[in-house]
Image 1 (cartoon, one colour):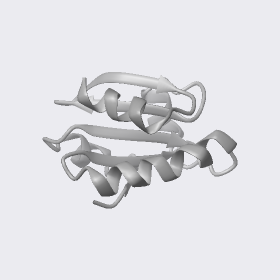
Image 2 (cartoon, rainbow, N blue to C red):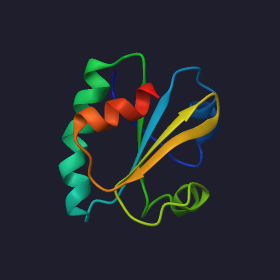
Image 3 (cartoon, rainbow, N blue to C red):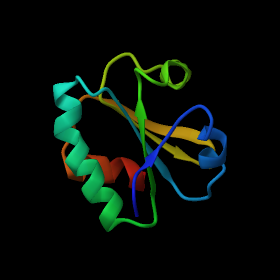
Image 4 (cartoon, helix red, strand yellow):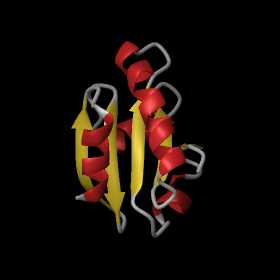
Length: 102
Protein backbone atom coordinates (compact mmCIF):
# COMPACT_ATOMS: atom_id res chain seq x y z
CA UNK A 1 0.00 0.00 0.00
CA UNK A 2 1.21 3.49 -0.68
CA UNK A 3 1.81 6.16 1.90
CA UNK A 4 -0.87 8.81 2.28
CA UNK A 5 0.04 12.46 2.62
CA UNK A 6 -2.08 13.60 5.52
CA UNK A 7 -3.41 17.14 5.82
CA UNK A 8 -6.04 18.84 7.93
CA UNK A 9 -8.34 18.54 4.89
CA UNK A 10 -8.21 14.73 4.66
CA UNK A 11 -7.44 13.81 8.28
CA UNK A 12 -11.04 13.13 9.35
CA UNK A 13 -11.62 10.66 6.51
CA UNK A 14 -8.31 8.91 7.27
CA UNK A 15 -9.10 8.76 11.00
CA UNK A 16 -12.48 7.16 10.22
CA UNK A 17 -10.70 4.18 8.62
CA UNK A 18 -11.03 0.89 10.51
CA UNK A 19 -7.35 -0.07 10.02
CA UNK A 20 -4.69 0.83 12.58
CA UNK A 21 -3.03 4.06 11.43
CA UNK A 22 0.63 5.05 11.66
CA UNK A 23 1.32 8.75 11.26
CA UNK A 24 4.88 9.91 10.63
CA UNK A 25 5.26 13.58 11.60
CA UNK A 26 8.31 14.90 9.74
CA UNK A 27 9.97 17.86 8.01
CA UNK A 28 12.03 17.88 4.81
CA UNK A 29 14.98 19.52 6.60
CA UNK A 30 15.10 16.92 9.41
CA UNK A 31 18.00 14.43 9.19
CA UNK A 32 16.52 11.74 11.49
CA UNK A 33 13.24 12.04 9.56
CA UNK A 34 15.10 11.16 6.35
CA UNK A 35 16.56 8.12 8.13
CA UNK A 36 13.10 6.89 9.19
CA UNK A 37 11.37 7.59 5.87
CA UNK A 38 12.63 4.48 3.97
CA UNK A 39 11.62 2.30 6.95
CA UNK A 40 8.11 3.79 6.89
CA UNK A 41 7.90 3.15 3.13
CA UNK A 42 9.01 -0.47 3.64
CA UNK A 43 6.40 -1.01 6.37
CA UNK A 44 3.70 0.45 4.10
CA UNK A 45 4.62 -1.91 1.24
CA UNK A 46 4.85 -5.01 3.44
CA UNK A 47 1.81 -4.41 5.68
CA UNK A 48 -1.44 -3.64 3.82
CA UNK A 49 -3.36 -4.22 7.08
CA UNK A 50 -2.12 -0.80 8.29
CA UNK A 51 -2.82 2.66 6.94
CA UNK A 52 0.41 4.66 6.80
CA UNK A 53 0.42 8.45 6.57
CA UNK A 54 3.03 11.19 6.57
CA UNK A 55 2.40 14.64 8.02
CA UNK A 56 4.75 17.46 7.02
CA UNK A 57 4.78 19.66 10.14
CA UNK A 58 5.84 22.73 8.18
CA UNK A 59 2.75 22.47 5.98
CA UNK A 60 0.38 21.12 8.65
CA UNK A 61 1.22 22.86 11.94
CA UNK A 62 -2.38 22.44 13.18
CA UNK A 63 -2.11 18.64 13.03
CA UNK A 64 1.30 18.72 14.70
CA UNK A 65 -0.18 20.82 17.50
CA UNK A 66 -3.25 18.58 17.80
CA UNK A 67 -0.96 15.60 18.42
CA UNK A 68 1.43 17.51 20.72
CA UNK A 69 4.38 16.96 18.40
CA UNK A 70 7.32 18.71 20.07
CA UNK A 71 10.18 17.02 18.21
CA UNK A 72 10.50 15.12 14.98
CA UNK A 73 10.28 12.51 13.76
CA UNK A 74 7.26 11.61 15.87
CA UNK A 75 5.42 8.38 15.13
CA UNK A 76 1.82 8.11 16.27
CA UNK A 77 -0.40 5.03 16.16
CA UNK A 78 -4.18 5.49 16.11
CA UNK A 79 -6.69 2.68 16.59
CA UNK A 80 -10.46 3.19 16.71
CA UNK A 81 -9.93 6.95 16.51
CA UNK A 82 -7.70 7.09 19.61
CA UNK A 83 -3.95 7.55 19.97
CA UNK A 84 -2.62 4.34 21.49
CA UNK A 85 1.11 4.94 21.07
CA UNK A 86 3.43 7.84 20.30
CA UNK A 87 7.20 7.92 20.02
CA UNK A 88 9.61 10.77 19.25
CA UNK A 89 12.93 10.18 17.54
CA UNK A 90 14.21 7.73 14.95
CA UNK A 91 13.25 4.12 15.64
CA UNK A 92 14.27 0.83 14.00
CA UNK A 93 11.72 -1.10 11.98
CA UNK A 94 11.05 -3.73 14.67
CA UNK A 95 10.15 -1.04 17.25
CA UNK A 96 7.81 0.70 14.81
CA UNK A 97 6.07 -2.59 14.00
CA UNK A 98 5.78 -3.34 17.74
CA UNK A 99 3.99 0.02 18.22
CA UNK A 100 1.44 -1.03 15.57
CA UNK A 101 0.82 -4.40 17.22
CA UNK A 102 0.08 -3.04 20.70
